[in-house]
Length: 300
Length: 269
Image (cartoon, rainbow over all chains, first blue to last red; front, side, top):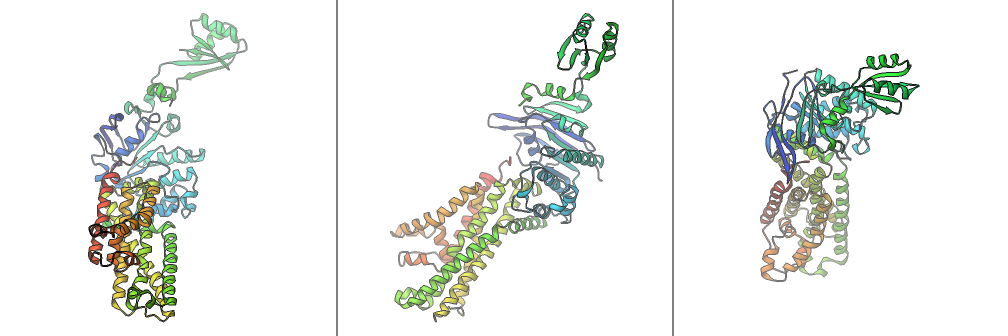
């Protein structure tokens, strides 16, 4: 593996008429990690990736691979592999011929076609016309296209969309493997939960603006801790906790105690002579921090 | 240069890897063979001398062979237009431009590939026209003029015309990326609008001067024979064969350049 390539976004901006789809985005994506590019639908993720790949012209700013714009790369497919949407196929063309056309255009070895088809698990289906493919198979074919040139950088737009549970497990392993080989992996998603097991770093955008950049752990900034507790005498338990100064709210299966440690809650119940039937610490989840960051508009 | 070679090979594979090219080819060959054979049989049975001097002897065979390009050109245009509109329709411009970010290179490769495919269609069209036409002329005892070099020159110019028409189709597809709209325009213009314009332009001398530059008229001039010419104003102006070829080439270049600005270099979303 040759040296890693860093993706650099610098002041990237795109306006469509009066609408600012992407606004002054600046960040870098490092090799050897999986970076999640997150944001609600309509946040400008796809437009940003299309500008990075030279398909959409930025209004201002730039996006480069170690300083080189996509269209100036001497061997684009062998440097950057990308999968943008699941529908970019002629339905009447076989998967193998689909890949062959781009293998020829990029001047790659035609043996790569069967190699990548096998790598994504489509080895037995290469001669079938893509029109008969399921959404999951199309996602895999999109990935096969991305891997065609054995690239050092992977840019994948919503790669998990449409995959079945087995496919999701498979792609997580694949992304990890690719990053461990020193490649730069950038994947977009509108759901943090979809990628949180795969990504090391997150870049969060909303309304075309960068709102958070850091490690996955950095998202979990909340100091707030909650405890879920239940007892046969639920009313007595709530009263005891209220008397101890905690804010409690009823849940379907117990009561929720804000700003509490499980040990403290257990001690109060014990002191009040109320046997607890359930007691667990609840941390404010990554997903909630994510939704908080992208705001109410995130619920599109 | 090798990168252009790759883009060119890619475009050829795109044509040959779906069923469209041979379905269109079969329809075209059958259509031309039936019409050229039918006309040869009709004139052979009635006797060419009954149609006056324009149909006699040496004139009949070229007219029948010209069914190749005059009926076949619409298939060449469609093949070219489908090659570009398919890229828009199925959003394959994305992987295409990712593999070849220089979009001009893609467009030129497509024009060259489809010009070749159009020439191939031209060969098929002339095999159908000359095969069926000459066979039936011979059956009625009429000289099919196959030993006349002029006949083979006409065949060659017909192949050239078909190649240029296919390039025009590519340009049209870039200018009108909507596949349905492009097909409607091709069919309406070639089968209806232009024949009417050519007829209308033949009524006065000054309009006939313009009418000879209509693409179908220019194509007939390039081929050198056409049934259309029989209905045109006798002695009306026609272009030299090479002028007709240049008009077709010019149309292909102009629509491609216009399409470059209106769609090809735009954002792919």
